[in-house]
Image 1 (cartoon, rainbow, N blue to C red):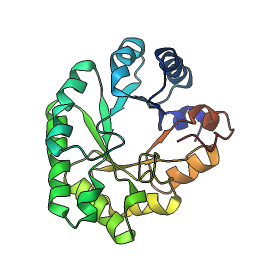
Image 2: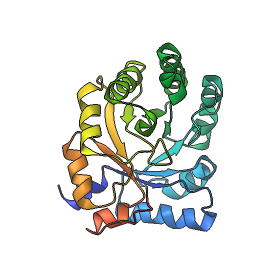
Image 3: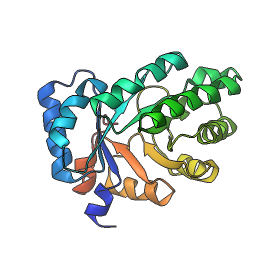
Length: 229
C-alpha cells in the first residue's frame, strides 16, 4: 500500500475542546496537504470545514454526544438534522454503554436504530463508537458489534480513543469486529494508532478506516506522541 492509498483510509482527527479556530484552520490545511479521507472535527467547526474543504473531496466528519454517550436517544437524534444543514457528511457517536452493561440490550439496539434512521433520512453516514474499554469481556464486545450492525450503522468502531471507554485499537479487537460485524456494516479503528506499522497491522486485521490524530506521523513514517488519540 502506497502513501496515497494509506491516506485514503485515514480520518485525521482533532476534537480537542480547547482547540482554537486558528488551530482548526491548520488542521484542515494539513488534511488537504496529506490527502486524507476525512477531517474529523468537533461540531462547532463544521461550517468552517465546509468552507475550507469545498471541492477537495475530503469528507467532513464530526461527533454526536461525544464523549459522554449518555444523552437520551431522542437527544442524540435531535442534533442530526442540524449537523446535516451545517454541512457534515458523517458522524461518530457512542451508543450508551450503560444500557449494555445493565443487560438492556433492547434499549441499546433501539437507541442505535433511532440514530441510524434519522441520520440516513438526512443523508449522513453513521459510525458507532462501541467504547470497548467499558465492556467487561469478549462476549459483551460481540454483543455490541452485532447489535450495532443489526441496527444499521454504516461503520462499527472499537472505541473513540478517549477516556476510560476509549481503549486503544488492537489487532485482536479489530479482528473481533471484522468477524462479528454484519455486512454491509464495515470496520473502523481508533485509539493510539500512531505509526505506519501499527496502521498497516490494524488494516490487515480487518479495518477499512482509521481515526487518528497522528496522520502526519503515520504518513511520514514516524511515530505520534503517546498522548495522541
